[in-house]
Amino acid sequence: MRLLQLLLLAALLSIFACKKDDALPATQTVMVKFENKTGYDIKYLSVSRAEVGDLKKGKTSEYFSYEQFGQQFGFALVEAVGTIDGKKYFTGSACQGICGTSSAPHGTWLNPGYYKIGIYIAKNEPNALEFKLLD
Image (tube, rainbow, N blue to C red; front, side, top):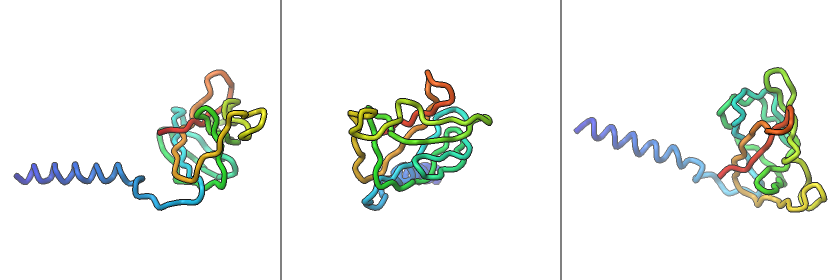
């Protein structure tokens, strides 16, 4: 009986732990956290003027606040730089541009709220990072 109670308690705690983002307060800005999906540690990461700092592989940053944040076809439109294995990596071409301009004609601004963005190494560009919106 005691074992069953402990298992039930563990299940309830895991459910509430997974739902902690649902309890975030309302916001008037775009709140973004970054998840490192590169397979490598990133050092000195800066994303559109936010100093993210070091982000280990598979880890997620805290939330950063932006007044505006654009996206086009699921790619976050950012300016970024970080270091992987001693080499500087910059924003990949899929993630560059400003919404509504010729470089991002289909870009849109995100509504205020909370978002998670995955960081990936670009496949066809040397030393480039891509930033994709996650569900």
